Length: 195
Ligand code: GTP
Ligand code: MG
Image (cartoon, rainbow, N blue to C red; front, top):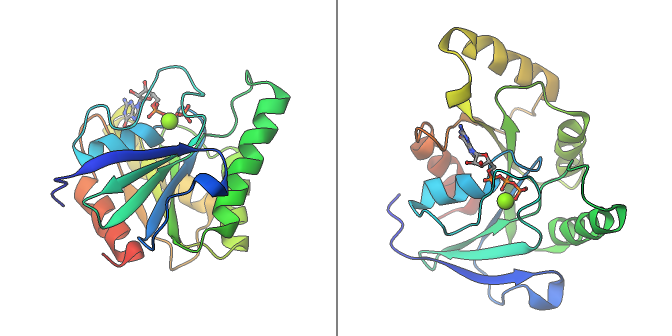
């Protein structure tokens, strides 16, 4: 997909700030530092559209991006970052849940999982939570460049057996470092957003 226009519309903390209109939206969820913001930059071929950091906890608001004026990408704060205060964590949790539960434009969620590790309890909870709210999910197994070639199959098998995704939810092997899975990720996103 050729992205000729990509811009940040707003960093929102509540529904009154969500953009108006009916463009389909795709949200990006996952553990803090898993690579959500990097994923957005990679598939839009932009270096700094979404801010990334080696330190977890970089994204702290719901960041709405307009893509080619045909859909919105919504970068959301990651979960599982211990160093954030309880108060802030609760605020992020409420803000994110409110968005995911109430936004009619939301067509699906890209859930990013780190290819190197077994999914955390919070990853499993997140997937189940998304399914409880009947949101379609694309599992993106990212940082594939960090997994040895000989270990790929075993890692993927373990991640999929632990999450046990429902048959309609696809998965994509991805790396922001090498660009692996970019086209496949776009295909899955376009299908969900009907664009
Ligand atoms: P929060 O905003 O804190 O929730 O994190 P995030 O999920 O948005 O992660 P971000 O995109 O900021 O990336 C975190 C770190 O992982 C950065 O140092 C990225 O360069 C690195 N990173 C992201 N994707 C990949 C990848 O596919 N491969 C490798 N090797 N590094 C990656
Ligand atoms: Mg981020």
